[in-house]
Length: 225
Image 1 (spheres, one colour):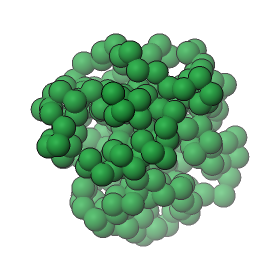
Image 2: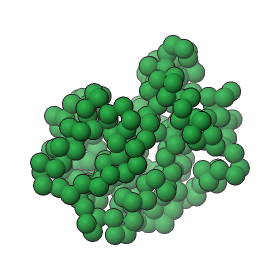
Image 3: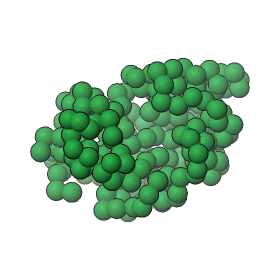
């Protein structure tokens, strides 16, 4: 990809080897950015090829943010095959089968100890946004972190003790997904803290809004091409 972030943006100089270790494993769940397989709600107005290019840029931004954040381990839970957008320093494991709730549950099942999962739909994330869940004392007074999305879903979920049962059966991709997931956590007796509310990139309007809010990202550069 030729598009690069602005030199004055903190994302433009990532630590390729990964930032300092922390107590938390960072997961990114994503699809290989192939035309017709990703960001289908961007088509139209974008062609499948342009939508895939935007998805690749968003994924690259997300992975660079993960590399710059302190974590015990960094893992991409991938549907598909790695491509040139994958930087060194990130392990890759395949996604499980089933609906999104089952795939998220399987991602957590492969971890032990505190774990924070994010998706590829929020290229505006940065280490500062993730920091509350990655600090050395992040889990001293809570059991779960939830990052609400403006569409009613969630962009991040952290668990001090990964339990796949906390995700299985939660309806995904609905305007109430975030609220239902939080209810599941609270009903399990977990202490929940919130991360900032972010906007997912699902539609063309989302894409333009996120790019305007994070103009130094690869995503914004790709959108402006």
